[in-house]
Image 1 (cartoon, helix red, strand yellow):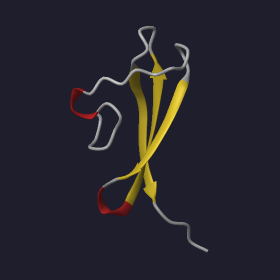
Image 2 (cartoon, helix red, strand yellow):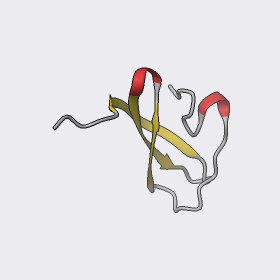
Image 3 (cartoon, rainbow, N blue to C red):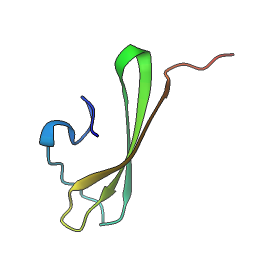
Length: 62
């Protein structure tokens, strides 16, 4: 399910210049300071299809 700031959130249609089958990565800062990692696959018509989405902290502990 696309989240706010996802490339396809709210029914947005994004056309990619890449070949069909290409995987496109997208990251953004989500709720509560978590980083959202998304993967899209370019469809034959050039649009993007969300295939995976995960979250993680937006910082590294040292």
